Image (tube, rainbow, N blue to C red):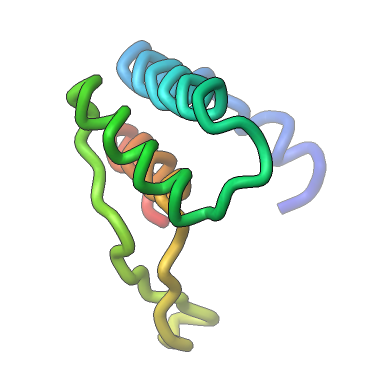
Length: 97
C-alpha cells in the first residue's frame, strides 16, 4: 500500500464502533484515576475487567490469537486486555485481524 492508497482508504468508524471506543477509553481513564501510574499490569487488567463488567462491555481476557505471516501460522500471542477491546471494535466493523 502506498501513501495515496492509505490516504484514500480512511473511513470514519460507524456510530456503534465510536460509542464502544469512547466507553472503553472512559473505563480505562476511570481505572487510571483510581490506581494512578506505576501499578503492575495484572492489577490494571483486573481493575479494567471490573470496570468493563460494570459498563456491560463484553470482553475476553488472555485469549490467545494466532499470529500469521504470509498465510502461515507462526504461533500465538496473548494480547493485553486493551488489545482485545480493539479487536471487538474491529469485529463490529467486520475487519479481519
